[in-house]
Structures are given as structure tokens and as C-alpha cells.
Length: 218
Ligand SMILES: C[S@@+](CC[C@H](N)C(=O)[O-])C[C@H]1O[C@@H](n2cnc3c(N)ncnc32)[C@H](O)[C@@H]1O
Image (cartoon, rainbow, N blue to C red; front, side):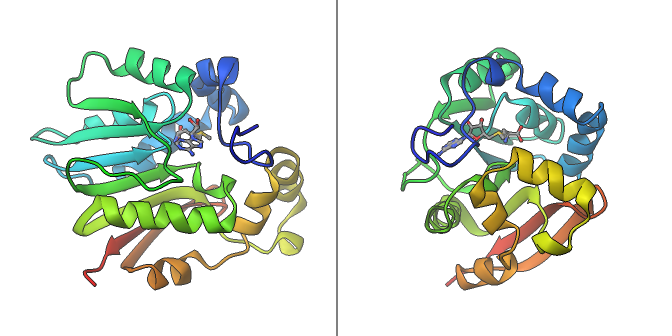
């Protein structure tokens, strides 16, 4: 349960955070590792990219991004769970260009510089709509002009029309905000928030989407 949004499940503390990567591998019957590697490859990371990872988790994604950062690139994770931050620091301690800070992504914040990419992976669906709009605004403000906001999360679908093999586990595991999230038109919402030039990749029978959009200069 989230400290800030009691109906949300995306703030992960304690043992669930400590064993988060193992739990994901187990729950996906081992498929998660190759999936997340592929998704990160499709982010089209350049060697000098500076990347913000919103709700960075254990640092697993940051390490995968690091493979492409052969130049001056760097990753900064923003995370609120102390146990996740501990895992992140442990996992990435060899790499000076990967860091994490204790920072909420759902409230305005300012950083010393602007970034080439903002990545958010399996975090966004777990907030109320008004908060999701704040997160989009935070991503916009954190990006350089023409930087990219990259969301890895559930694809959109109509709950009553989706097959039972997906609908039942989704309804069992996810929170009410996720039910609302999947039925919204996110490209439209992002376009209204200053993003365009969309590209997307779909996974797991189109249930998961990597949606990338560019910050358009207002
Ligand atoms: C489902 S996990 C995903 C972790 C990671 N992005 C991944 O793909 O493995 C959601 C993460 O978002 C973090 N989180 C939740 N609410 C947050 C907030 N308001 N600000 C920053 N991080 C948050 C959680 O603590 C957790 O680490």
C-alpha cells in the first residue's frame, strides 16, 4: 500500500522491495528478464544520453540502460522506497554514472540540469488521474527540448472486452487506478501535455506497451 495513495500498490517497501527482481522473474516464469532487456534496447539509448528513471526500483533497469551508455551518459533514479534505494545502491555501486536519490515523482521537483530521456516503468498506472498529469508535467519539465518520455506499462484496453486469462489476474493484482489507466487514451493526453512524435512497441500479446514520445518545444 502507498503511504500517499492508500488505494495504490506501486510503492514497494520491505521484503517485497528486497526480493522484487526475484518476484518478477518468478511471477513471469522467467520471461521478465529477456522482456526487460528487449524493452531497454528499444529505448534507442545513445552513448551520451542522460536518463532519469522515475520510480527506479532496484536498479535493474538502470544497469541495463548502462550497457548503452558508452560515452558520457548517465542514469539518475528517483525513488521513494528506502529498501528499493538500498537495493539500487548495492546493485550499481561499481558505476559512478548510475545514481539514485530519494525523490517523489508525483510532486514538483527541480534538478540541476535537463535530461535526454525520462523513463518510467510499471509505475505510472498506479496513481490517480490528477497525479498522473502531474507526473507527465514533471517529465516535461525535466527533459531537454526534443527529449523523450518513455513509458513502459500496460497497454490500453477495454476491461470487459479483454480475455479472461488476462482480465482475472489483472483485476486480482492491480489497484483501482490501474483499471482507470488502461481505459484512457494516453497518446491524446500526452499530446495535450506537449508531447508528440510517438512510437510504440507491444509485448505479451499486446498487453504491455513501450510508448515513447518527444517533448515538443512550446
Ligand atoms: C512496480 S515498481 C517498478 C520498479 C521499476 N521501475 C521496475 O520497472 O522494475 C514501482 C516503483 O515505483 C516506486 N514509487 C512508487 N511511488 C513513487 C513516487 N511517488 N515517487 C517515486 N517513486 C515511487 C516504488 O517504490 C517502486 O520502486
